[in-house]
Length: 309
Image 1 (cartoon, rainbow, N blue to C red):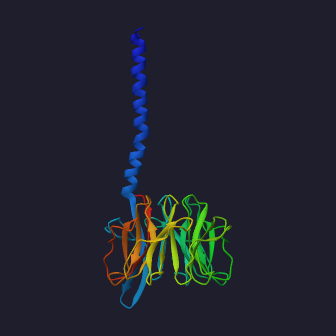
Image 2: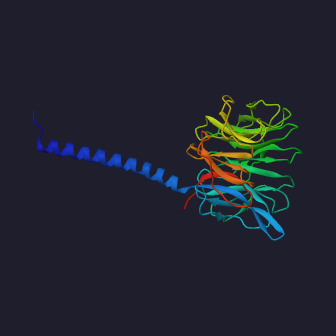
Image 3: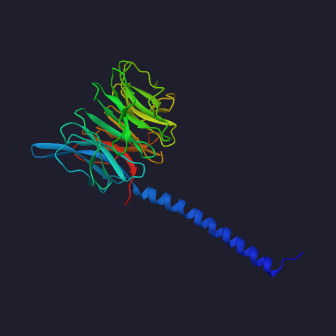
């Protein structure tokens, strides 16, 4: 049986409609992926010396180390930055009020605001995946513990509570876990816990070495960290359950502070292999290591972020 011209017209119209809808659905994916790549930056802190005075400030640069922009500018130490998931805010530690506190600013360096107000030292903030919470270190109770607060600085409460020091907390990509390192077994080891502080569990067990500075891969399956188990600090990687630990860098210098890229294909880290601390980048398997900064001053604590234009 043949198709009437009305039926054929309707069929053509339906086919064109499907094609248009498909193109509309695909276009944001491609635009988003390209835009995300163009906007991905590395935020870090840099030693600033001016005559007899010196301090640290927060900078941002492109993935190849170009177009470095200074975001903070004052005589205090501004250091240890972290980028919010939407790239609009950067949290950092600063001693501009006399002791280290947590501050936040827009990604262009404007609208700086203090979130914590204590006579204690509060450092190394990290955002939750939804951007609503910040975890950080604080020694307000006499030793360093992991605290959590809302991103506006309210509702601060302690997640760890013991007589030893806990440091450098980072959320897992799904927000359900927090990795950190602790001295509770006598030397620093990597631990993880639920986001509410419960079910704390030790992941590394090396009584003769320091395992520190954990960083989750974007899929949550891996944790990168630094360890001196071979005599000097190197970047290691393990599964999120602590298994399959292996070394990614191999040299006699100091490699530290690993940070996964948003797509999980790269790791940025700090190294002093050329005589002073610089920012390096490598593939997630440890290959293709190369230097991004080339200065005679210290540059440390790299963090990736998708920043707006």
